[in-house]
Image 1 (cartoon, one colour):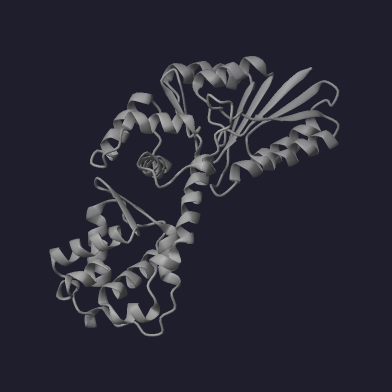
Image 2 (cartoon, helix red, strand yellow):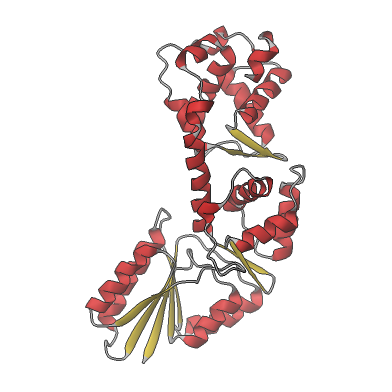
Length: 334
């Protein structure tokens, strides 16, 4: 029986060694990807070249990136192979934790092939209970640091353990985070896997837990958001509303560093004093619209969207708004 693996490598990241083990177990391994989720050493590249030349390892890069691009590519490939392969002597494994791939398996079975979906088993804690990310207590300090780490790692994924350790120390230097504890939590909740100093990432799980955080934020929006009347009466709230309206329009081009964020605030709100700019940045942080870790900034998308959706018929032009510092301190802090 010839076994063929269709690997959703963007969902289940693999190290070089893991990929070599799969090539030993399967007659053919097919990968479809939009963005490369792994890097190879020169030795690894040379070793894989032999498998590629013999077409035991087939790599297909999607011509365009986008949501589920690689998934559609893998589904198309499964259809092509189902026409070419012998039903009696061929068996398919579809390796992914994505539930949608059940449909590919079902269609292969309809075509007469033996097929199954292979998933990575969830890690269990010492009591044998599966760790569910929805049970995270997002109010605990260590989990707040974990969330900060997830937001940063969604943008950059160091491939080696030492690089990951050093990156987190640098990114979270002034946050008071225990980096060793944060990495242990990343492993415990299956956000990362470390084998032979190589790090692989479960980006889907990261997105899931960050969406849980967003849902918790939504539940408290009624408390956090001011009324329309309050916004119309308080210039600093008008500025927040105005800047959130701007941020909602540039979701892919938002400033990633404090300096560029301050420049953006200056351009949008036309503030001309350095102290005014710093005070407004502090307001954004206090309102949890912006999170700052060292010189990097991330954004609370749910809160920005909520501020932007507030319907205000009249909002004073920025040049007519009284400067924030001219208001009493209680106004700035409210």
